[in-house]
Length: 429
Image (cartoon, helix red, strand yellow):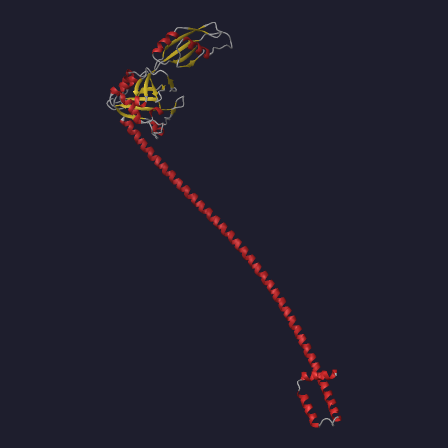
């Protein structure tokens, strides 16, 4: 479908659903063919842009809403032009059809032919003859008779529920818009079914040239009269949306009758069964994904536990190694201290032994000295006694024999050390 175009003149618009801002506007298109002369000079060509500008200049005071090239060959250039109102089409055709164009640099005259655009829209004869001749159709059953309209190129945004915050089309809005022509039995918007693309292998998300998302829809009427009224109303029309600000845009939509039994009971049931199968398959896939995810999480958990265990084991070994190292260091320290202590004790013992030996030596020397002194003293005492006895015999006048015996007895009763001292003093005297 072509992109939406801005509408400046809405006087010919017909209301479709005013609350939704939707209207129908007549298609005001024309086809213009310009016959090209044979180019005699090599390397020379006719400018399509120059031809288009000449066509615009031929309509005098009016102007095209859109003018584009639909086909270009060596023999002719075909344009599609659109104007604002249906009433302008005839005046445009009068200005263009049968006229000629003279291009600069060319001696030949270019002939112009213009005609009203032929709309591709099914007629009543088309659907009546189709359903009459179709052998696999039962016209007594809904969906197998002319009661369903197939619409393509509908802008999603125009059929979205207001204040929903979404640009997805709504079935309620679609029913509200097309119930103007009669009671609606059923509608279907394939793009709203998440399983439809997988069921049919088609992509229902389509874009127009303006970048807006379009959708297709099926509208089934309860009565044949509603179908007829809708087809007659849509014939030769394009869809127009008028916003709250009063600005209007329009786009071409493709309208046809459904020839595929899309909304027949059998097709609906078949889609439901396929949807159920796909839902079951999706559940299985989700279950499979869940199991895979759980298995993956379990594996990750096991790997994490394994890593933690390995980390714990490494840490334990490291701590054990550290502990052994510290223990070895302590043992070395203890052994070193013990050796130092033993060394000190040995030194102390050695010093003590040497001191004991020295003291014993000193004692031995003292004993020997004492024995020597005693010996000398004994000798001296004996010599002294002899001397005393001799002196006493010579001094009988002073002392009596009794006194001498007393002195001798006193001397002999004295302790050895006193006698030694006494004798030493006597010697000194």
